Image 1 (spheres, each protein chain N blue to C red):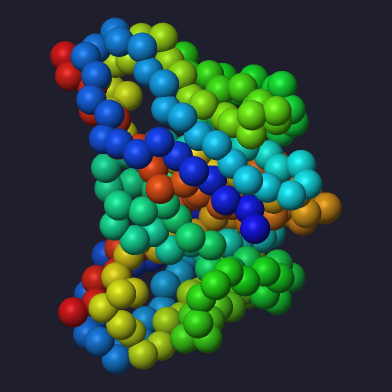
Image 2 (cartoon, rainbow over the protein chains, first blue to last red):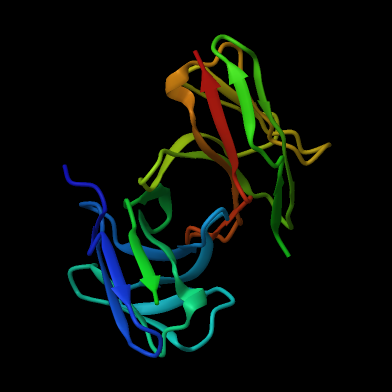
Length: 112
Length: 115
């Protein structure tokens, strides 16, 4: 039973560019959340998707946007990249109303 | 708003030593509390959890008790091993009805265990 799968594992982008990160949730899960973990810090909540809609959002600018597809997979898009966007981006899936979160191994984004 | 304050590291111990990592929280309602562990280059793994006051979570020799009176959830292990070396995060999940609430994390505590 596959857990949460994230791609790519590593990515290097230039300031001002746009990036798309992908997440496939654990089998049976219908909700996807995204977190940003800067070096030496705890993860910070970006947003959560359920039924293809954004349900909760953390304190991140509109440059951060997302999408959830009918198969529950999700994308995180970041526009106009800044050096400060360099971080590990974690995807977590869950089943609405029950259980807990399962985290993926993350995508390491480096902005140069 | 909800928040977690976690003992800062790094923490360095010899094998078989006793471990305590302090965690306190601020929350409205009745949050659930968690400890996650992160090994180098990996994502987060759930170590243990407690969903209501006085619950004790335990796993792999680690324990933590949900103390509402002191708003704490300290992580303990009686005898650490080299393989326990990792970063440990305390987290709370807001109570949010039928939808799983967001997680609030502490800054993490780096634990290094020497043989």
